[in-house]
Image 1 (cartoon, rainbow, N blue to C red):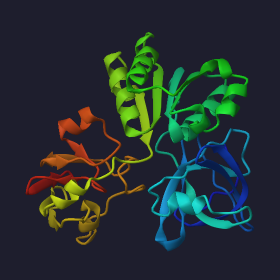
Image 2 (image 1 turned 135 degrees about the vertical axis):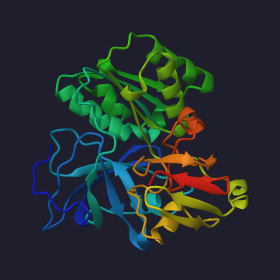
Image 3 (image 1 turned 120 degrees about the horizontal axis):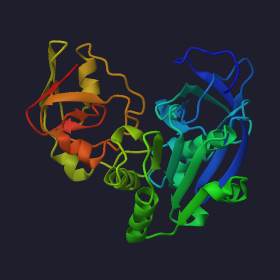
Length: 332
């Protein structure tokens, strides 16, 4: 969608802050144009970029570009009260500042075979959903968007959505309590016949995503037609940290094993014996490192798998989850 010379995905790309806009309470959008000598690789709806920030920090933000916006990357950043330097840094930047990013990756793509698309966004999860909506409308596709937020003031892009030519396909659900949210979600997903060519996309806080997935499955949506992306895993409690114990990980296909210490991730421990996982967010929400589990009592700490998927105990996110038993066997 974005025509330019493609650069190697892992090489940093210099970009310049072209515009800053307040989109909602605590949310600002940032337009990133190529710095001199740089080009912007192509992207597809649902893609995100990795920002390389001072102090070795890296953060992932979804693009909300429309298909006609090919000269920049557009992201929206919510200022988190407990920010460890990511969102706070990006709320302090100014127009003209130069940043380093990595090329877009898409772990949340549109289903090319789907004939009808249902989009559900919660809070800042509107960013990739907005990108999808804009692309699907432009393509003349059958699409409906449902947007949940604590209030209109906290709903990024609310004014833009209300004025959109396809506003009749947009349904905003603002200021609902837990009971009302559940009722609305049930109405959205259970009140229609599901076809084999339907696709459901969900992005937002973990509780909202779990609710949407549960309601969809109960309404007859096949799990293969439900696509989701989370912006964060549930916070690890102090009690979880205090009860962490060492455990052994056996990498069955590789014929290797190692110990994982308290406070250490499986990914980090594995690296010491030459086992490399494919990772992206390293926070348990993107799904990149999803790994099959053969044996072990998993302490799930991710925000990607649903409660039902976690309960099966046959897969895990080694970038953040741990093991309660003394031994964990992975299909690696």
